[in-house]
Amino acid sequence: MSDPVGPDEESATIRRSDLRAGRSDSDATATAARSKRSRTPAPASAPVDGEESTVSRSSLKVRPAQKQPSRQRSSGATATGGSRWRSILGLRQPEVDTQAVHRNDAPIGGGAAPPSRSTRRRPELPTITLPRVQIPSAITQTGARILDLTGDRIKPLAEKTAPVWRPVSKTLAWVSPLGWTVFGLGIVAWFLASRYEWTELAMIAVACLVLFLACVALAIGRAKVEIRTDVDPTRVTVGEPATGRIEVRNLSGRGMLPLLVELPVGRSAARFTLPSLGSGKSHEELFVVPTERRGVIQVGPATTVHGDPLGLVRRTMEWTEQSELFVHPLTTSLESLGAGLLRDLEGEVTPDLSMSDLAFHALREYQPGDDRRYIHWRSSAKHGRLLVRQFLDTRRSHLAVVVDTSPDVYTGEDAAVELAISCAASLAVRSIMDEQDTTIVCNDQRISRSTAPLTLDTFARASVGPMDVFASTGDAAALAPDASIAILVTGSHRPFIQVQRALAQFEVEVIKVALVIDPDAQVGVRRGAGLTILTVRELSDVRRVLFSGVLA
Image (cartoon, rainbow, N blue to C red; front, top):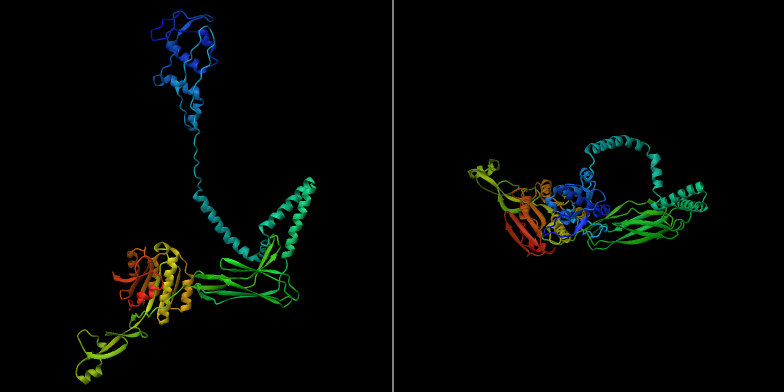
């Protein structure tokens, strides 16, 4: 019997035996069919196996996934598998499209139904983020304590046994990494050759070990020489030539083979290959020291190199001390600064009148409020009225210069910082030539009341880098409490409020000057907020802005 079919349904029928035959071919289609049949009311009499019965095609239609929650759950479990483990491991459940099961038209006439195909979305691989490993603080603190305890105990023992292990460590330091590689290769080849009786490895081992021992033999021995180095002059200005000389003398009683001598000069090293020298003979070499930049150039120590041409063993011996070549910044000649501190015994007399100083000027009649200590009693008795002494002010200058070496506050950075150092050096040299006290603070360098060469050496040692201008100015005020002029050399990008606060650390009567390096501004002098602001673009402009006597 066949079920009636409505007008909106197809009239084709499918045998139940055909559906059984296609069960093994399409699991997804069979599962959907069984789920559909469970919803269809059962007929009055169930068909017996082997009998043919028909099922309407409408009963095989699949409803949308959102209307069949039970089927969606079963389909997801069947398609993905292992959903329980995925939930336990915290992996994402891949989505399954329940509508991907397509309806297959079974042929009429008892043919086997073609296997159905299901379209599945490939699951994405999970992304695993490994946590950052952090060592507990207790472990690090314990390790630090152990190192402190063992260091305190091992250090005395190491000092006592230094005569034993120090020569051994120096000897082992002769061998270069290449030499240790050749030696290790020889040992490994010797072991393998003795174990497996390989003649080729034995030859390699013998070659490596013989080569290593031969190189060590070349490095053994002590050359009896005398080496002298000198640089003339030891102080130069940027750009001035500086030459050095190295002299090697053979002090042994026999001839000396060619010898390699190395002499570090700044960041580079000069190498001299000396010819064979007889007993008592000497050889001299000249070298040029680069002086394009301000700084301190380390020359030496001169060392002799003993070893092999392959570089397996290298033994060096120092023969001279390290010397220094000072490259001073550029300076320009300036006029006398002409300002000073009041009431100084060795100061210069000024036309300013005062009631208490060291230079006597004249007598005048007593006025209420005058100090009675300065009453001249003899003249008062002679003239019949009280007369007091009047003085002239005396001044002695003390110049305090602070250089801002922060490159970010200048236009031009390092080159502008060098210009600022040159301006400060010019001011310092002029002050010392006027026999005035001078205090310099330039980054990490400080000097006070010294000579011109030593002051320029301080500028040569100063490094370029960020600095705390407020703290540096405070150091200058502490080094020069009697300063009469305070100059801060800085760039145009330094805020004015910072310059004002820094110079405010000096006393009220001190002349405060801000020397600003700005290549884009107009050269000139301004006054405001208790400061004198000098703007320069190059080194020669310092003489122009000081010509008007702004520091007097």
